[in-house]
Picture 1: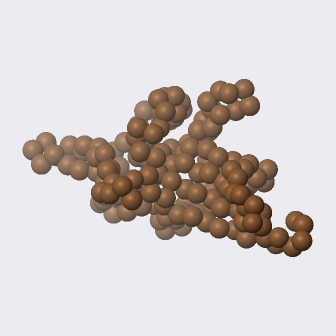
Picture 2: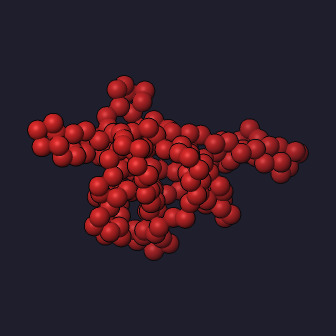
Length: 169
């Protein structure tokens, strides 16, 4: 980098509201995942690069960047049973087609670590019978009802889970 300028690579991880996920993305994920799974969240990950004092721009790194994020409490087990998380990446290929693929990741405690190299949406899925803290119950029928998680204020809507800054020499 010229004149010893710093390069800052920022990964923005934001949970998408249901209405912000395209029907095409939802259908692509549903088609790939088994029937005994359910989507609990869509997450958008975007990579940004800033060189020196120049404007930050959205980028594709060309090399995978490891990111880690903690599973929010509402997506953790409500009955202390292990949760079988899976992640499906939704992206647009060079032909403009919507594509999906399972993502390899590691999990330590409630923290997921995975590699990303471009801007994509990710669906967090679990077994259909998994009881999560964000699920609500019907007291009469004792059946699980999926609760739409609404944010309490404008400030929290579309809130980012984590920002990870990497400063490269």
